[in-house]
Every structure is written in structure tokens, then in C-alpha cells.
Length: 74
Image 1 (spheres, rainbow, N blue to C red):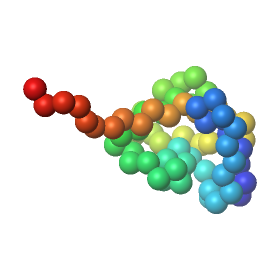
Image 2 (image 1 turned 180 degrees about the horizontal axis):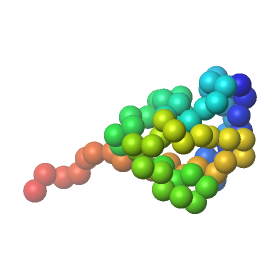
Image 3 (image 1 turned 135 degrees about the horizontal axis):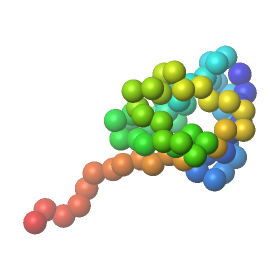
Image 4 (image 1 turned 90 degrees about the horizontal axis):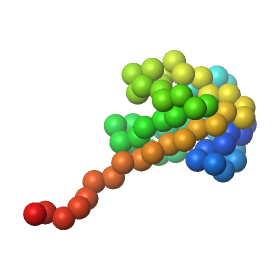
């Protein structure tokens, strides 16, 4: 299934998502670790616990924030 969404302000097309994709599928497709990602779907924060039930549809607007570790030891 081909699906085009707006991801962090940029149009992006996915060709290998399942027939009825959800946020969990999308995060996996992007190769991100789910414990380090926050998701806003069409202006609403989506709790990680509901990603498998949160459908992603043509034209949806997603904002993803990927957290990374690092810093300076004090």
C-alpha cells in the first residue's frame, strides 16, 4: 500500500506499509526505537500505549521527536 503523509512538515510517501497502517507500523518502517520517540498525529499527542490502535491515513500530519542520549559528565 502506498501512503503519503506530512512528516515533520515534509511530504513523505511510504510504499511498504500494511493495508491498514498504524503508528506502530510507521515507527518500525522509519527504523526508530519506540522507547525514544514522541508522536503528535494531526495536532494530538498519541500515547505510546495506543500506537497499535492509532491508524495512519493518507494526508495525515505527524510530528515525530526522536530523543538521543549524550552530554557531558560533570
